Length: 331
Image 1 (cartoon, helix red, strand yellow):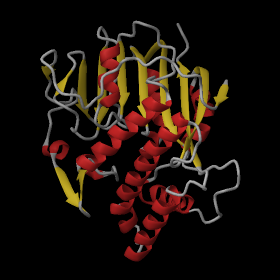
Image 2: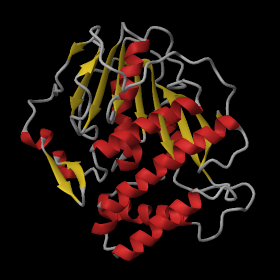
Image 3: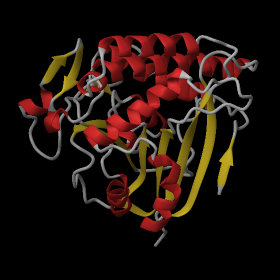
């Protein structure tokens, strides 16, 4: 089943912001990995092109993990909650899940808030970088590992979640097979990803729209240098069915690029998204574009053109975001 468009608003979940001040209700939890001790390759970072990057697994992740990236991730999390009126997922996991994992958790906002929602559940976040907060709910833990490895064989998870992760995975089919193996019968997986293809319903985007140019360059660089497929989510439902998942569903939203919508709710989402996109552009041109051989003047012109286009309210561009969820067959 596939749905498209904006759903009816739902009541806010009264969830706390991930960057709220620490309270004494939480115990400090040191980041660690159940798959081995933390070595220098896990905890060390390198500064290049004015940004900080992790070096775990040879630094294969091309996006920074510094303070600017934290701000982008926090803003992106706020954008998601605004889009979905506080909702964090669509999969019908029920009221009492006991084991949840967030793959590619980043700075951990989603895992922390889900841990608050389900205090009886064990919530785990996995990421390549140990960049998550130390003060967290007692039922939440963060592990450092590569989710493309054979990271777990528990096969008893109620829910596995991924958000903006698949575009930096070399083999999404293999990853979702591993997810299938580690879900309990009847368990759910949900992937939330932007399809980097600019859309427009009224022909206001020019043929040389700079954001489209940016994504064409990204697609080539991510594939040739990192072997990533940034458009994988388009065929993800079919891939999940082939793996063996059932009840596969997809819901698509159109994220406005900038504050051009008349609807107040969508205008706010578009304002968030413009800032998130601009920060992503700056992250990509900091290292991947330079290492791909683009000239400095070419990069600067593209960045300036993107910024100007996203601030033009006469251009009604959007990007589709896909929410795909599926179930492992019940026993």
